[in-house]
Image (cartoon, rainbow, N blue to C red; front, side):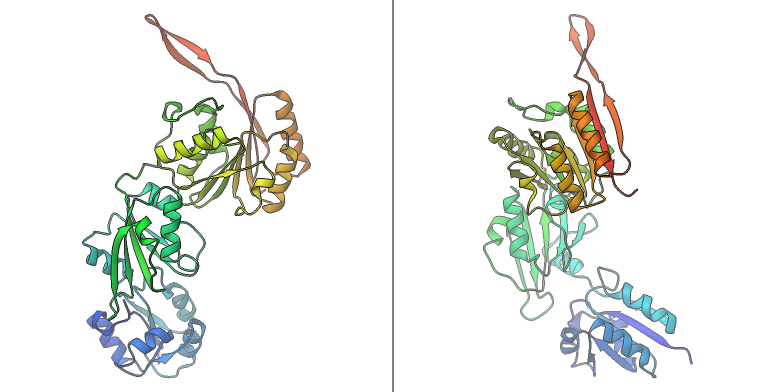
Length: 398
């Protein structure tokens, strides 16, 4: 006899929110396994054996009766255990999947919001941050959990200058104790919430992370700034990925930090700067340009790098004479870290190249950027050259 397994999305875990198809499959199954919370919530319908995920799979395979039902919370295709369970069961019989009501659908309906334009983020037991998503998307739905509580997420938004954003929080959705709250991130950060909570963040002024930044977009003051042609080339040499953790060492005005933050739009960029004037400009520019995922760090590298998350990529625009030491620390923290060093002087270029080779960085390249811009002189356009800049890059997988 062919074995049958049915993975059922239990939605909010309340009997009233099961689809009729899911309810019928649950009632008709020979055996039913579920996580303890779901087993307790739906145990009034029929006998459900509580189990861990590994036990659910093990006991389902060992069960001689058919069909076997496995209950998973939420929707079976929405950050669910279904994928892992399905893969393990397929070798032992047919697997049918029944969808359920997701927490996103439920909360958005309660709040009168659509979700077809929402960016979806899971911070439930995962590393990551909401700052990039909330900076570059008008609507973000997030699953919370572990260290990423509603309070900590809202406090992160406040610390990033996004405390004014409207946030909806849904707790214990579908249950008798359900609570839905709305307020600014700053207001909600002061409250306490259930562990079973999700949230929706609205940012009507989210910026387009696909748009390149021009030099005219930045407040400069008296702090040197990496010019746009060099900045665009350097950022692309780093091959930034959406979830990367990035350092900008010697961040100056923050122009490279903010440009990188748009590429690492789901990650974080740490803008390390030792001068107060630079730190002030970084703060002004990141707030004005909507770069909530740029985090200013005061201090001298490499000491200022202590305590920061392990980097995937690093731009070094200024090293204070500590370039070999900085590169050694970066290589030690992540052997595959990708780096790009900006140099105007031949001596700095030589030092960078020698250090990268000595530390056995892979994929070492050197290029020189020489750019000129047109300016109006009477009725003519005259070209004015910028200083040539060396970009020395290396790292990544060999």
